[in-house]
Length: 334
Image (cartoon, rainbow, N blue to C red; front, side, top):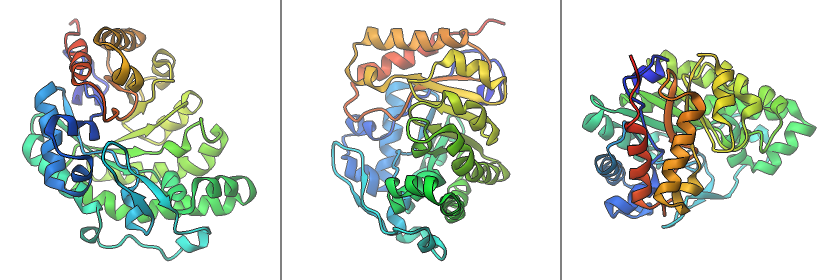
């Protein structure tokens, strides 16, 4: 993993599927337990890691925790990913004096403590990564995505202010996560996808705040990965320009095109389709993994085999095993 993140050619292809809440099918803990109990979340992620023997571990992906800590209403239920049900702030001015409450008083503490436990358990042998929501996405969670998108068109200076303010609000949480010792922080910025906003809007509203967040992460001796769902081919250059060490790409992006664009500036992670992972056969998964590997030219510097996004909760364990085994049998030539 470290060789690939340093853009060195590894001895074999590293594999790290985005295993989050689907680990509940391995550990037997419920989704609600994983999102509210740090120890159970960590044990569930370790259980999946031991079961499938991939090369790194993540905390659970949850796009709502930061917004919930700041006053948003969220719905957490079993067999589904959490989502925001009520956006507390309709105007960007309301964000002016907003500050993150003490982390120990919110559900953010679950992810901080889970990170600490994962680092203690496997940090010497596996890459440990934690998540933080991106500033543009957080602004959409707090104000409502539609309201934010309207601002980008009608009052762009207010939209830019909202993103800048959200980046500042996130900084203490990022620092607290890094203090636990993870190797990598993954910034989740799905609302800034080219499936949602134009590349020009990404450059104007999301990119400046992402650069500041990446700079903060790297200043604390951690690596930064940027994950944006959906179509991102037109913003690959801009994503690289944030300074991120790695880009996690969705299945709709052609890896060969993206790999040609990055020019050794960062590492690519991805991008087997999560629908294939959930509904396909083991042969379908193996073929999809082989296609990803062949798209970048085999075992090369700066590529990590993974899924295009967080695995669906119902993903069959045999499909996860097939993905990992398909990747790990790929050895580099010296």
